Amino acid sequence: QQQVKQSPQSLIVQKGGISIINCAYENTAFDYFPWYQQFPGKGPALLIAIRPDVSEKKEGRFTISFNKSAKQFSLHIMDSQPGDSATYFCAATVLRENFVFGPGTRLSVLP
Amino acid sequence: DGGITQSPKYLFRKEGQNVTLSCEQNLNHDAMYWYRQDPGQGLRLIYYSQIVNDFQKGDIAEGYSVSREKKESFPLTVTSAQKNPTAFYLCASSPLAGVGGELFFGEGSRLTVL
Image 1 (cartoon, rainbow over the protein chains, first blue to last red):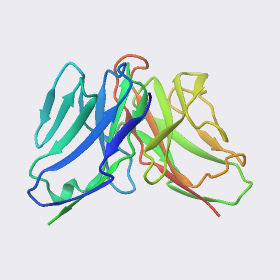
Image 2 (cartoon, rainbow over the protein chains, first blue to last red):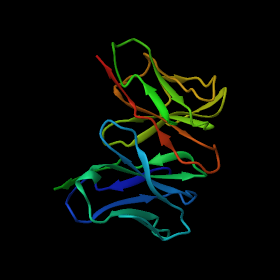
Image 3 (tube, rainbow over the protein chains, first blue to last red):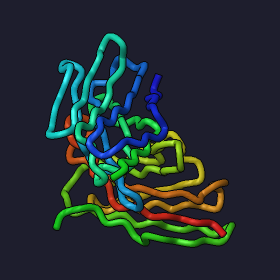
């Protein structure tokens, strides 16, 4: 119930391509779904987040798509750049307590 | 600058020794958290605290201990009872426990047991 599944485990994309990372959850009580970006040797940083009453949120090249009925959400990175190479974590939380994280996706964007 | 400071960044420990990781925040956040990160396993919650002098166990609290004597400080002790302590440890804080608030992370402490 508390688990958040994430795929793929790793992803290689050419510069300018679209990166897509998918997450799925079971607990329908989750009310907030953030994505975190982590560079090697650093702590994660909030990238973008969405609430379940919204189907899509876009910030620059980053878009979250949310499918409440399927209990799935995904991160799309448009025009991927080498500087986007990092590990991405999806997460879910109820009232922003006890954030539950997915296992992470290591993204490599080739120049 | 406001933020979360973790120290040390790298730490080596012999088996059987306790070690304490420091976490200090000057963001005036109410809640603080400790996560453990292992390759391919994401972030797992060790302990969290929503108020001074109070803290709760997370999913993997065994072998760890914490204290919250000051709002800005939340040190984590990795005890000799922790069977596999080699990992990357992340401290985080959020501005308001229970309602609202994003997680802000420190830069982590990498512990290696020799």
